[in-house]
Length: 170
View 1 (cartoon, rainbow, N blue to C red):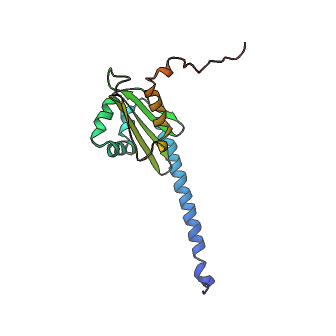
View 2 (cartoon, one colour; view 1 turned 90 degrees about the vertical axis):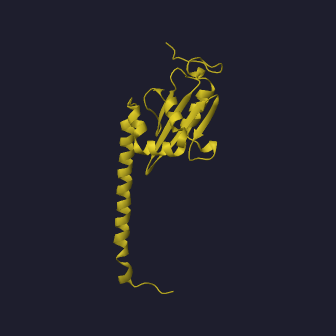
């Protein structure tokens, strides 16, 4: 095997450094846009705008297909956009059908992509719409929502038997 002459490899080093610097700039720019996306929607009551964000809307339409309208009907009564970790979520229910017809949209904003998942509770069953094929790979956002739906949301309002409240001493 012959080694390349030094005049043949010398030009590669500056190009490699430029490429790495360029990738670093892209990563920093993407992190900044990721933070801006989260800051824009976390705590927002502009839920229509959140659901119309291209990264969210296109993925929801692809994941749900003809079921998209059912999701939107089950999100008709909703609060603001919540944030847990790096995941934005929006939950709701169909009018006058809380604990009967509910839904969630979870959007995890990562560098270079946004992962969107949705869940619909209808007729006593829950369907999860995700690119993940196995439940254990679904987001905590989806799993926590499933836990709440399955409990009828009672643990949000009534103290569970195995929980005690502790307050600091006076």
